[in-house]
Image 1 (cartoon, one colour):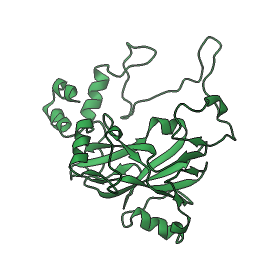
Image 2 (spheres, helix red, strand yellow):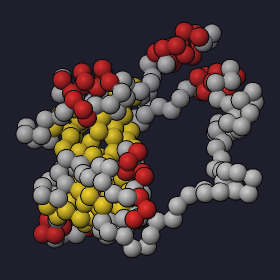
Image 3 (spheres, one colour):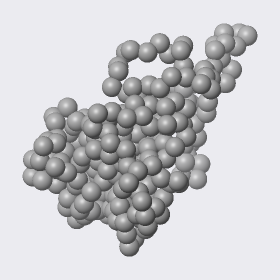
Image 4 (cartoon, one colour):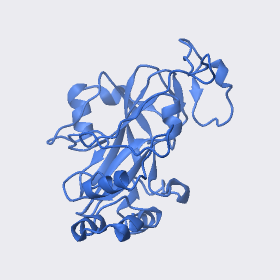
Length: 267
C-alpha cells in the first residue's frame, strides 16, 4: 500500500490511503501487547503463531450452543441474551468442547471465542474463514455483541466475540482452541471497514496490474465498480478433463486437529 501512495499523482488520493488499509503483523502484535486484543480468560494467552502477516487466528472457546437458525443479536442485545431469548434452556444443552466434540453436518452452532477485542475509535475489524475451513465446506461467520452484520466489527468495539459454525458437507470434531476463522483490522472512516479506495482501484485497472489470465496483455475493465471473475468448467485437454470432485453423501467425521491424516478420496 505504501508503494501505491508514492505512485499516485492526486494529493487527495494519497491523503485517503495514508489513513486506510489493513493493519500488518507488527500492528497486531502491538494491539495484543497493549490490550486491544486479549484472551477472554487469563489462562488462554494469545500465542505468537496466531498472528499472521495481516490477521489473527481466532480460537474456539469452551462450549458450543446448538441453535435452530442463524441470527444476529441486533443493536440492543448481546449474543448470549439473544441465544437465551430464542431458547430459554440453551445453557442446559450446550456442548462441552474441552475434550473435543462432534459438530454434526447441517446443524448450526454458536461458539464463544477465546479472544476479546477493545478497539480504538479509528480501527474496525472484519473476519473470514481460514482456507482450511473453506476446503472442508464449513460455514463460519463472526458475530459481535449488539451486531447488525456478520463478519464485521464496528470501529471502537469493546467486548466478546462469537462464531457461527455450520458444517455443510462433513461432520467435524473440534475442541477448545481449534482455529476456524481469522480477524483482520483496518483503519475505518465509517463504522465498518473500508474497501479499496476508488482512486486506488482505478489505478490498478489503468496501469494494468489486474489482467486477463488467458491474455496477459489484455487489461481488465471496470464495470459498475466490480471486477468480474469466471470459473473454468471445460477442464484441461482438448476433450476436457477433471473439473472438480463431488463429496460423498455419507462419510466419517473429520477431526480438525488431524493434519495430513485423511485420504481425500475417502470423502
